[in-house]
Length: 510
Image 1 (cartoon, rainbow, N blue to C red):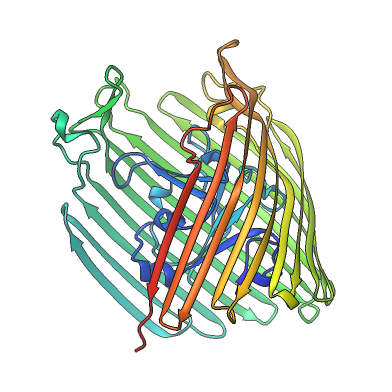
Image 2: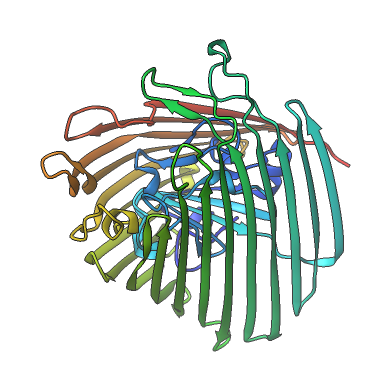
C-alpha cells in the first residue's frame, strides 16, 4: 500500500518510519460504520469520546494529547473549526460517505501540517471515479426510529473523473439523561451530507482536482443540573450545524516526472446555532478558514526527494456576543526523503511559522525505518516537535488573552514490526512519549488564560493482524497510555490508561 500523509511525497508503507495506520474504505463498508469516529475507535493510540447520544460532540485524542491537538484534513482541507472554543474538530459531523481511506498519523506532525498537529493528524481521502458510470443507492432502518439512505454515482477515464455521493440519517434516539430519574424525552439526530470530487487532466503535465462537501446536522441535547451533577431533559434545545468544505488544486509534472508541484486553495465555512431557550440571546457562531498552499518536490536522485512548500492560512470567527475577529499564519517548510540502499529509509524536515498574534514557531521531524529482511522484521522510529497557535476564542474573543503564545510538544517513538508464517501474522509494538509545554489553561492567579500548563504522556501501542486463511482475518489493538498533568500530578481527563479493540472479518467470494 501507498501512504499519502506521512511524508511530503506518496511513499510505500514498508518505507515509512512514522507511526501510521490506514483504514480502507472497503474495511469501513464491511464493518457497517456510519461515522468516521466509529472506525477510529479500532486504531491503537486513538481514544474517541462522545458526549451524550448519537450526534453529540465527538472528540478524538491521539496519544494522550488534547482533542484540539488533533489536526483533521479532508483531501487537504483543514477541518478544525475556527469558531470553536479551542479549534477542535467535532467528528460527529463526518459520516463515511465518499471516503476512500483514512490515514492516522500519531506523534507531532507540525513540519508538514503546521498548527494543531501536536498529537497527530487524521487525514481523510475521498473517492475518485474510474471506469464506466456506476450508480448505487441503499436504504436501511432499525430501532429507535432510525433510518438512513445513501446514494453514489461515479465514473472516469484517462482525462476526467467524477464521484458524487451523500446520505440522510435520521434517528429518534434515546435520552442522554437517566430514565430512572424521570427523563423520558428522546434526543433525536439528523444528518444530511452531500459531497463530490471532480478531476480533469488536460495534458500529461497538468491536472485539476476539485473537492466539495456540505453537511447539515441537527442534534437534540439535554441540559446539565449543576445541583446533582447529572444531565436533565430539555424538550426543545437543539444544536444546529451547517458546514461547507471546498478545495481546488492544480498539479503539474515536469522533466519526465522528476519535478512535481501543486498549488491549492481551501475553504472551510462553519455556521453553528444553539436554540437554548434558557438564554436571553441563544448563542450562534460563524467561522471561516482559508488556506493557500504550494509545494514543489524534486527527484534529486532515484533515492532522494527534496520537497519545499509555503502555506498562508487565515481564520475568522464571530458569535452572538462577539464581532468578527481574525488572525493569519505564514509558513515555510523543507523535507528531505532519502533511502540508503535497501536497509535505511528516512526523512528529515524543518518548518518555520509566523503567526500574526502569537509570534513565531520552529519545528522539526526526523523519521527512520530499518528493514531486517533476514529476520522478516523492521525497526521504525521518529522524533519531532509540534505546536498549536491559540484559537480565536482564546486570544481575541471577549475575555481572551491577546498575549498568548503557541503551545508546544516534543514527541518520539520507537517500534518493532515482525512478520511470521509467510505474512499470515503481523505484529507491531511501539513505545511512545510526548511532553507538552506552554499549554493554555485558566490561571486562577490572574483569572485569565495563560501559557502555564504542562503535561506528559507515554505508553505502548500494539497491533496484531492474523489471517489464517484467505476468508478470515482478525485484528487486535491494545494501547497503554499513561498521562499526567504535571501541575497537579493527576491523570488527564478522558484518557483511559488501557484500551483495546478486536475486529473479526469474514470474506465471501462472489
